[in-house]
Image (cartoon, rainbow, N blue to C red; front, side, top):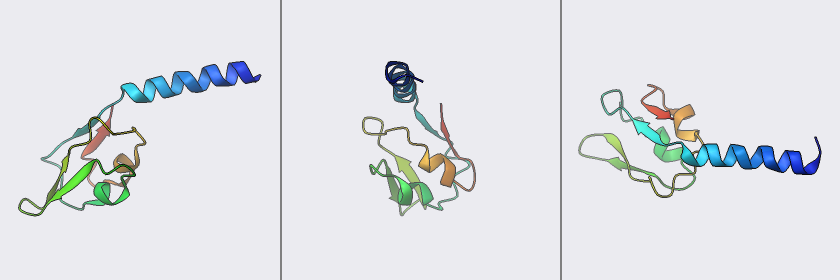
Length: 79
């Protein structure tokens, strides 16, 4: 691929990822908190009362998918 084509392809990928959002199924969450531990931009907060997590990073989430991959119960989706 030439440089211009590569950059165009990457720009498309970035725009696609920026449009994706995190969805948490609170019913499936078991409080493993692995999403909280792996998030590079601190989008998650553990709730010690419910023993679950709360997603609060709508504005800072970079859609990296680390939380999705780490969740043992598939309670998190990136779509």
